[in-house]
Image (tube, rainbow, N blue to C red; front, side):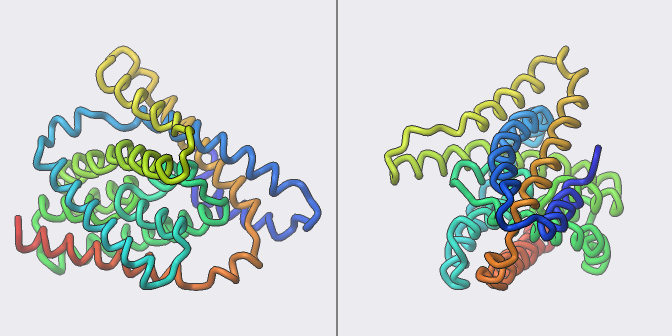
Length: 291
């Protein structure tokens, strides 16, 4: 990988402070980031296999569905309580409910989120991912969670797939297997949730636009699941997708505007951390006492 996604974002933000106000760089970066983001989402479909859903069965689908419903419900009320801008709150909820940056990347073009909104939501999610990687294994041992319980907890409460795998690897092989299966099942909810938002916005605005890239994401996922010969190219597609996403975040970082950021304030962070902590606590209660 050329540069990890979070470092690409931070590099873009850093360079944005040296861009003159009359420069056309931010506008150009905004234009190209939109196209590249959608292409990266399409290619990301190659990394998600429906075999994981079939292996986990209806229990895994039901578990992730209930988790998503509760997080979106909490997010809906949280946006009102913390008075967070709706699109920003929606992206933070999406990232918390499904799979962090990937889910945010998929939903952002559908709801027409501004680059600053994407920057804030992705930055907050990356921060929580880093924290999760270090504290979850320690908390798992402190609460004396079994391998299965920890894997389930990590898959439900940690945003990004890579951080779920990292934390579960530190806890044990069984935890890793459980976490990977449930997490990938959870990640596949990107498809119906994104289409649901698209349908809702279409009815509200009477727009004829379609999230074509989500259809491409689904097609890629189906192709790499059921057409075995193409799997030899899987690593190539995943590599291009991850670097495309990193480059997208770099371009988004270039559009960063400190004055707009000051107007937004700390409310989004307080909303996001409250939503995440509720997710962590509720999912911990589930794995500790209900399974």
